[in-house]
Image (cartoon, rainbow, N blue to C red; front, side):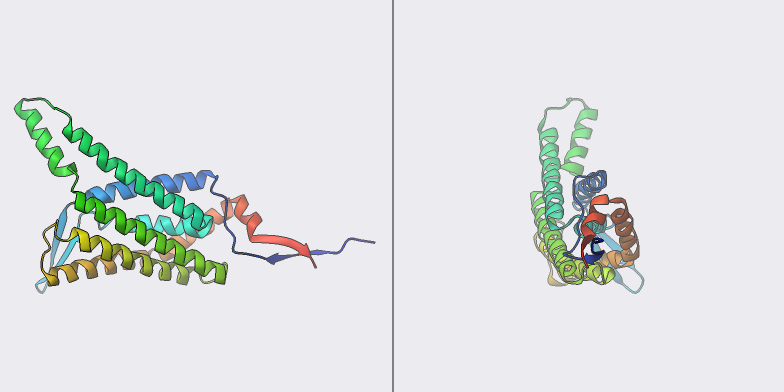
Amino acid sequence: MDAQPRAAVKTAAAYASRGSSQYDLILTLMCVVIVISNIGATKGVQISLPGDWTIVTDGGFFLFPLAYILGDVVSEVYGFRAARRAIFTGFAMALLAVVSFAVIIALPGFNDSYGAEKQAALEMALGPVWQIVVASLLGFLAGQLLNSMVLTRMKDRYREKALAGRLMASTGAGEFADTLIFCAIAAPVIGITDAGGFFNYVLFGFLYKTLIEYLFVPVTALVIRVIKKREPTYAAAEWEPVAA
């Protein structure tokens, strides 16, 4: 007698193995983005707009949303455990950068005028402002973990459906936590001391980062689809043949 035909049915939410070159590349880029944006965050930025409107932010504002986009890709394709690994690795690399800058600045330099000027420039540009470091690391850790958790929990429920909605919901939750924690600690360091300035700082930071990520949702979704197709372990996990 012929064997019973086998049908493909969807089981649990699918994730690829993190033992792949794509995961390594995304993790590397994520760490670089975090380190550079943390350096930029030490500079306060004030942008004047028509009508006496002023935007208050920091020097890393244009780059940091990319870290969340990469976090979305890792969470959707590789799952929460892989995303948590990437987040903790990025956290460790940011901390290593700060400690390295502190050691470099502390090393004795040349005593001539040029050496003194270089030392002063290094201290000004890369000197660890520990409140900024703590604010950035804690905000990133809380925001990225919340972002990944919301995205993967929603995927457990909706599987491959509603990707854009899942990306937007997780982004809103993660960015709010990140922005609030970072601004609460960093605001006094960059010179924001009044309630109005703090509200402006938090509101602009949250809206800017969130809207940028929302605008890039189609690109993020496209990247996710491409990586899923290139990950043979994801295709194997997504469908599992069972007896009809």
